[in-house]
Length: 421
Image (cartoon, rainbow, N blue to C red; front, top):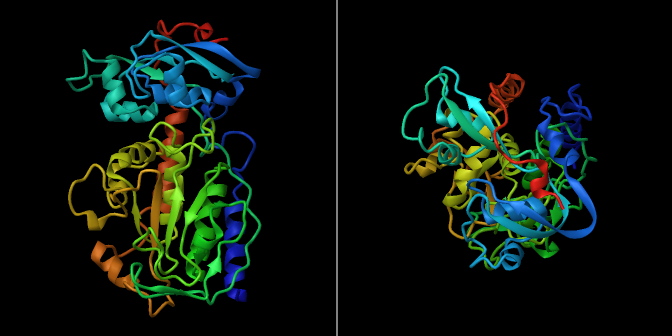
């Protein structure tokens, strides 16, 4: 690797690790960052406990709480299927070695200017759930002084934006690996095997060959993910390209070392071999990963099933992003002009995201040319989620945490004994 490139990567690591905000406590002052760990009881050996179903709780969500599969939970309780609906108040038996704190119902007093969406976002719940808990008021706008029921989950894992992480060791690599041709008909010259690193976990070695441009971009993005958001969970890289590029079954693309398949990150309570589902995916962590990739300015497109984009969208809103900031990034809830956004629908992209990078600035024989891609998308600046947007979102998120919520007191949510062994 050239001295200039080495110096650039060392500079990036120094900048990312120099923030005085790095500490062992939640960087945003949010006690929820540690509450789920501190209040979870770990049993010496698995035992049977009784879980009391809360309003609008799903079987998949309950399974994630206790680190079991929804198939097991359905079998233990003779449910018709793992997706069966369960009524609030139903008692389910669970064989587990962990007992997180139960969901709690609070009462929120609506402030002037509040909307259903904003109240939901500030409490990190889905707007549909908030309206479902308050059906009598759901059909009309909010008015100051109204009281809303909100079920919060102190046992929900928080894995990002609680503290900064440590900068990883620098990675040395060659600069002569080059992408040539298009993603669906090109090849890879002098490919580089994705190196072992604490930044990621590798899949099959014969499917993980990249260009120098791709590897440099991945190092930058994953370093931001680990340091800025403090995420320390596993990120699994499934495939990039074969050693010399070209046909790469079963993929139609992945031929030039610019396409990266990354499995959706799982919540820390979920067994690592679990196939990702909406209830098992760590959506805030996925958003931080996507934002870190976009912030490199080198992403052409990211493919993710349209039905999953809604979960990603709300995770970004929980992070403090505005609809205007997300409009050029996530296609949902839009229905047209898909070429203008980065995160787009593609079939069979439910358990992973497919990231396609722009051709490198010096890859003259790579297509489509990066300037053509950006022009077609209508961007002048290729960083729609850049430093200013990121800092603005962080400020909004911290303001929500520090603001004194108007809580009239806990309602009849049951005691901590509901989920106890």
